[in-house]
Length: 245
Image (cartoon, rainbow, N blue to C red; front, side, top):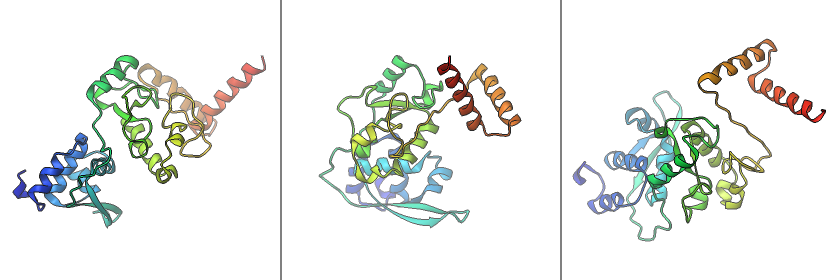
C-alpha cells in the first residue's frame, strides 16, 4: 500500500508506521490506514486477524489514537468498530515493545514447550509469550525473564485477557494486585483471581493420557455429575484418605 491509498496524510502514515509495535498490531494498522474504520467482524472474517481487541490494544499502547463505537454485525449482534484518528504525539510514554524472539526461545529451552497455565505441551509456534503483569498496568519489565513473562497457549492467553480486562484492577492499575493473581502465577502461589477469592486448576490430557480422561468422563456420566464435580470429588476423597491414615 502506498501513502496515496490512505485517507490519512503522508506525515501521519509515516509516523504511525515508524512506531514500535507487535506484528498483529502492524497488520491491523495497515488495514485501518486503508479503510479508516474496521469492525471486529471484518478483522476476523475478512482479514483472518486473530483476537482483534488485542491487536487494537497493541496499537493504542504504541501511541495510536483510536475511537471506538458499537455497530451491528452481519448477524445483528453488537460489535465494536474502530477508527484511527489522525493524531501525532511526540510524548509517547513507555510505548509497548515487541518481545524479542530470543526471550521465547529461552523460555522453551529452560522449561520446554509447555503452557504455564494448563501444563499442556504445544507446538512452539502456537505458544505466546505473555507479560505476567499486563502491560497496561505494569508496562514492559526491566528484564525479560521467567519472573516477568511466561508461555501461554492461545486459549489460556485469551482467557487471561478477558479476565484482566474485566477485573476491577484494570481501572485501579495496581501492579501489586496483579502480582498476587492466578494469571500472574498460574504455576505458583497466588491469593486471588481478578480480586475474587478463587482457586483454579487447568489440566490438559494429551496423547495416551486421553484414555484416562475418557474413563473419568464415563464415571462422571454414570454418577450423573459434571466432570468438574467428579474430579473435585475424586481429589477430595484422596486428600481425606491421606489425612486419616
